[in-house]
Length: 294
Image (cartoon, rainbow, N blue to C red):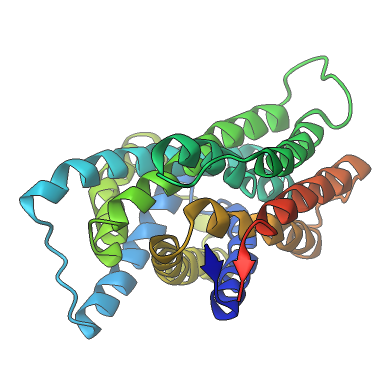
């Protein structure tokens, strides 16, 4: 499948912004616990997407035949985002950036079985395997852990979330081939919002003495830039081009995330994190080269 240079540039920019998302989540978690963070993030995102739809006169109410797929997607979405926020809360921002950027590995596997013509070739498999070796290095720190630490637990939760994210991207690709992308993105957030609110109200308390411009700004970044802009553009890209190729541009995300984590969160750039990030980047670059850019 040929991909225009403009689409490549857009995918790269979106993934640079996406790389900063784990850092923004980490900053926001100082005041807003995981479920509250998800609730506010997607409440902001819903407003942005609804405004976009109104401006472009896009019908948002689903047809009867669209509801089953949207309900499955919303459940999938709520589970994956909740696990991601809990995982990030337990590990470093740099480690979270590397872990979440590996979802193309799992997207490629899901696409092999779910998307006609999007097969997992030998070259794709090699690229994905190299990327996953980078994840293994980040998970283990270059050694076999003697006990499960808080950070190890956070990384494992993030790994499970990343597997779900890879599958969700491919399931979304199937939905947007039949449903308008704006409607898909809006309803996955809207249907999950009540679940986030209920869980937050039952089990979490906002840390009001930590609420300030920085955590609020982090929420706005997650809501406007990621949940609004990035989700919409990514849905448009995977509707028009090969889903497994588009998500493979995520190779830039761990580089962006690790750099910003070091800059903003003072995360240590250890040798295993640097090597893991490098392997993830190399593996996903190999994937990207499978696309024909015109």
